[in-house]
Length: 299
Image (cartoon, rainbow, N blue to C red; front, side, top):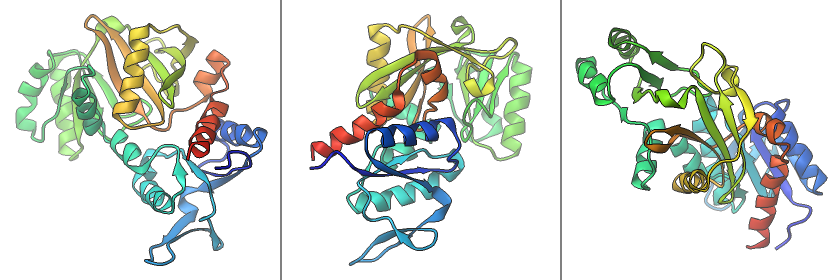
């Protein structure tokens, strides 16, 4: 099967984002034809004989060799539907629809990680405010973390320093019918986490993210600082295993160092490139294109 001169679609929302620009550059520099596909401009025809995916203006996208999904959380449902259509046409998706959908479900993600013998922070989930007291005790009491199930990039994450604060925040979220997780606060992590970038079953780069002063979230989007770090063989093994548990070819695996050993915080299916490429000087975008070439050559 051919591997040079591939036709690749980058399925995303904003062509100006650093990550998307870098992926486009990397594909072009390797001799491929890549087009930016705005998720909202794609639509499909379900048909027993001639299923199709169209792009605004009526262009048919059935001749693509591969699709790289870079999906915003608020577009998960629609984008995964599109990806399923691409998959049914035999077009290779660097991360598949099922893997992305389950990675976006925080609770399902944690359950999958635990099923694969990976350790996560102790987490509680309940439907009723009447269970708030036991929920707080379940994760070791305050201070604790409260997370909106739909939040990303550190948004919708609250640190409750006291039991009273925790009760107030949990009950406020519950009154809005929001789904939340409560999670133990790992104090010894000292506002630091590790982002391991996994491609095709290998950690290709890793950084340590440190929270801004007065902040507990280490996310770059929340003002966190990124620096190159050498992770341990055990952390590398855990990151690879976590990506595999989620069935993701490309993943940003977030770990924290705790007294119990490394814990998996989250597995991200559309990890940003800017923080990690800048801190490590690694050409992550080209490695993503290489993963597509390898897959298509091996068909």
